[in-house]
Length: 234
Image 1 (cartoon, rainbow, N blue to C red):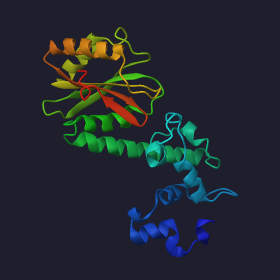
Image 2 (image 1 turned 180 degrees about the vertical axis):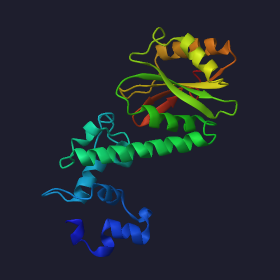
Image 3 (image 1 turned 45 degrees about the vertical axis):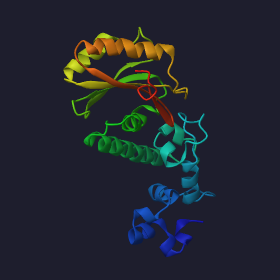
Image 4 (image 1 turned 180 degrees about the horizontal axis):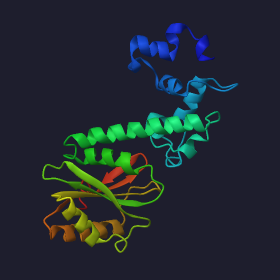
């Protein structure tokens, strides 16, 4: 049913203005962004399809769709929804990117790295959707506040492709007191390999020489993350 045919108090825009955004379902909020459907497919139906979309980063994971999954959708993923032209795709990608940046900024604005869970949530936003393997470092001050996050290496990560000297130089540049190491597994498994454990110990030894602590090494995949510190592997 077209939105205009709904009772006035059930139309998303009027409902939002009268009762606030929290009164709308996820589909109704998306429908407001989309504005119109196409012949044979109303805008609410299109919004429902978006919420059921399995992104390229999460196709292997049956439980990771909805709004959380949509945050990781790319413009190419959105092409799979019939009726989403270039303009609508661009608007949605822009809104989703704003949402990701807002969440990341909120996390960064306060002392959020007191627990492994806080680190994992932050890194999920930053790394989970990447289709290639990335090695990143969070540089922290003495109160575990984020100074910077840098993606230092990409591709197949081994002990020989991640250079301790470069990590040490960046830690000195940021005057970091501690770091959290992180990398993603686009394949979906977060179990650390022997190479992951060896790399962690190599970097821990190198950073200890400049009195920088390695607090954790987090492995991220779509929908989950593993803390090596929690597993006693640090």
